[in-house]
Image (tube, rainbow, N blue to C red; front, side, top):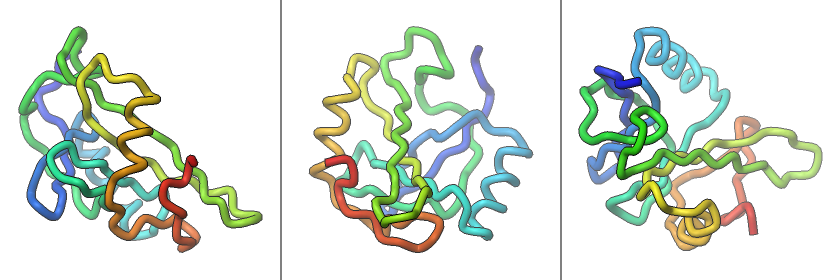
Length: 134
């Protein structure tokens, strides 16, 4: 299925990363999640070395085709759930990354482990060790 609009996040350098198909409900739901601090979303920018917290979504027409939103696209949207390792905390953060469609999950995790982190914390406010999955 092709979408006419996608929600994008912009890194501090201004590079855009597609997050999800855009609907009025998706933008409003994420705005509420930002205000309440629930379900933090982070993006591993494809253009620079940052993993940053999403503060706002921008609805735009698709810049390029992307799996899973377009079949057989050259790029793919990955989503990694990172658990908080504070004892007794069950919270997770989500990291989104866009990479070539043939990128393996292992290669993505290896790449992300070398990235610079900008203020990554769980909903309870605990700082995540970086990288959290190693």
